[in-house]
Image 1 (cartoon, rainbow, N blue to C red):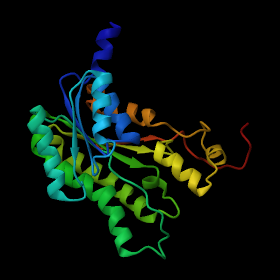
Image 2 (tube, one colour):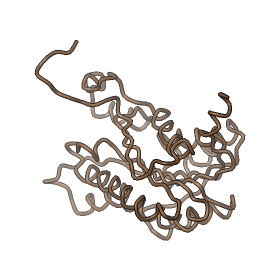
Image 3 (cartoon, one colour):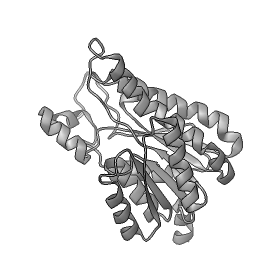
Image 4 (cartoon, one colour):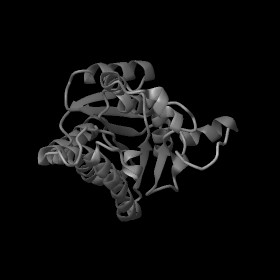
Length: 264
């Protein structure tokens, strides 16, 4: 009974494309999807780390992997990533729009180029990849999971463009789910909180950011890990979430509520 119950979380026979998959959250997602049984293509703009990541994922999971380079902010290159994945594996069942990054610029000082960069990388890229994947996901009755952020729900000072883009990504999730649901495509998002990736740790050290103090605002009192975000993605990609679409699942260590009394 346990084995049969757990099968609903498996991804055997499916093909996934993960953008921004060479490092951090994207790599953790690709690794877990492969461990659950999917063949996986990982995409990034630079070949650095990408080929090694694909090799490592393939060796540890026993699944077929593909490294594809391309810039997802360019609609033609985004379409090429999808087509190369389908050409290699014959189908596409899961698209994870993970590519993204926060750039620090206060709104009063942000340049038009910085604003466009934030929207292109964190919002437009997901639209381009999803639109390109639509015909294939219609055939497979597939799944899209967009990686958003708590910044898209509450905003973060100093990253106005990023926050606006991630909020837009959550609305793109809802509208795509409504439009594409009749074709059997499910579209959901994961809003990641503070996540301890390699790049994040380097940034925190550079800025002198006090992670321990910041985490005191979280009920769980710690940053998340890439693997914990990946678990949420794998759930939404599986048949265990077959009747869930248009939703944003928060993976952020709990609600950061403020009150008038000490609850300890």
